Image 1 (cartoon, rainbow, N blue to C red):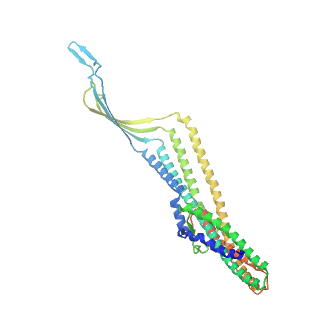
Image 2 (cartoon, rainbow, N blue to C red):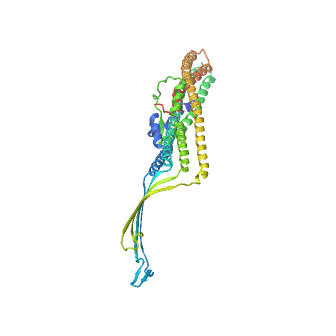
Image 3 (spheres, rainbow, N blue to C red):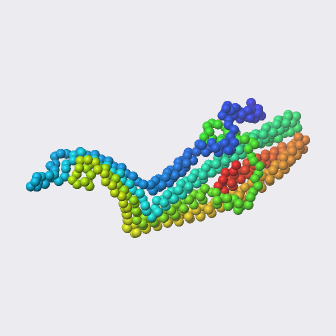
Length: 442
């Protein structure tokens, strides 16, 4: 089989694998990919559970301020081997205390906190802030997942677009090679001229293999991220890209980021929680005052003398004060530790604020650059297309060499690839800019 015949069969061989997997082809718009990733993400599920756990801590802190009620009940049977103590008098003898073999003691105790230096209030507020921080962490990871999916999706878009452009170029060059082959048979061109076209086609197929490998890797990763069967071939819609969005002043994006970024919110909430923790630790310097009450229903009742073999109730109510005076010198280290944690969080907040400003500025410049590049790419393609048209006409008229024609074709191909990727990159850069402000682009 001749080399030329093999080349003609290659496109068919490349199509066959796609035919066998046609039933697994899936069209996947970006928004659907993001939605599927949200449902599939184990990290988001874990973050959601962490937020719910933080909310239960708030409920627990609220419950500590409610009245504490304890119920106790017991029954006991005494042995009858003890002789009751008796007193003898001239008139006779009597038992000082009646022996009661069946005894039962039942009590209801109530304790209501009246004052603890505000410790419970500060603890509750700290837990609320920590719950809010956990929610911000969840929102941050949602945004990160959106960015991960978006990046994979657009890279796969670029790879797929490049495949289509190269395949179209291979087809065009194959037709041109066939024309030159006819001229060769007629003795109008040399064998080397046809060989140059075939060599160019071979190089394109090599590039296509590299891009196909990259597309396969991106396809697999996107399937895993979204929970789709990894054997599925994802089809990226050609008509998805939006019109260009005008760029706003840099300060607008920075102001938005400093207001909306979940990392900043998380650090602010944790810093506020740390401030409440300092107050809660300081509350240990104060005494604790509780309202206490007790209701007993016993047989025999200890307050009844002599003992009576029947149930009697007794109750009391009062106020209890407990003050751990040693806290004035043992609690200092805990207060110092809480202050250090507060300072550390504030430092992290300031550092994160600076990093976010740097990130927004970088993404802003990248988007601005892609806007400029897409204009240049359009101009470049127009020029390369015209140059290719001229060289193609010259080749058809036998007034130029295949080398010049192939050079023009390469430049046009590169211009097509540059424009295709520029269109995707400009939207991806815009989405990265919006992501840096703490939002997801629609």
